[in-house]
Image 1 (cartoon, rainbow, N blue to C red):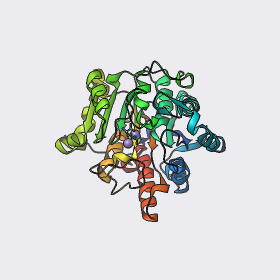
Image 2: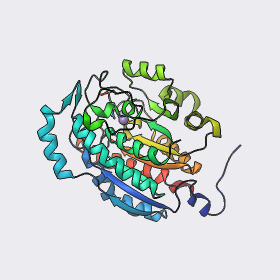
Image 3: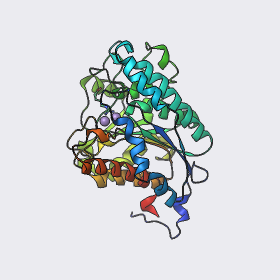
Image 4: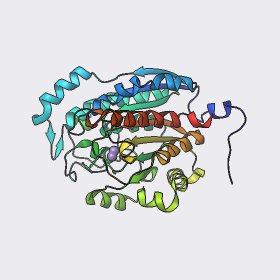
Length: 330
Ligand SMILES: NC(=[NH2+])NCCC[C@H](N)C(=O)O
Ligand SMILES: [Mn+2]
Ligand SMILES: [Mn+2]
């Protein structure tokens, strides 16, 4: 059956969870979860591109929050490079302290009945964002949109980059971890996650996904079933008892999108989502009215070869936010 929008715009103004089109943009200019400087510039670039007023045009009242201290972060990145290590992981204390601040910002936003839009930063920030949303919505379903699974543990990571590990922390798979990461509740259930867009998953990660029975839709599945069907299956997977309905958070790594459209990112992998698939995905989530929080991570303007690469990447990031917040459904 083909669904179409209702006559009035107000139909899409109502969310099942967010009380009054209010949202907080949480800036998370954090790069300590990986080694390439520049990803901390994501929030600034997206805001400079006009994101706040664009969301205002869609009827959202927005406030901007900055829970991290950029100057302090810069100092710590330099200082902690060598001393801040645990097992194979790099900068666990920096990641632990900063994700905790992000956690409190997202938790507060959600508890006020507002939509939490977090702009990264690298993907390690999702340790904070997802934990924050989960504190308010215990039956939260998490859609992880990414070329990568980001489910390495402190034991399994080859790179030592914690942006490759946030899901393992959310699931509580790192019992033995530094004090600074012990705040993470780690109470997300494996059956509440679905991946979309995977195409570069480490062997150890494949084993974890298989052992825990996590639903993973790779690019193979996107090609085989089409993006619409994949989204339906993902929603069903995380909310099976309520026919796919229930609070949803989307943690969107822009490297899920093909580097043809999003070139300025730290770990690009060819063969990704087309720009339309990438936007349809969030348009469909907006249509469910169940979306309560969104992360947009891994835009790194410093990795662009020219200005077109910067503007393609940043405008794709902003378009993902707008589509998730109702732009194309009006
Ligand atoms: N958020 C990302 N871009 N993650 C890339 C992770 C790559 C690799 N699996 C690692 O553990 O290092
Ligand atoms: Mn990725
Ligand atoms: Mn990622």
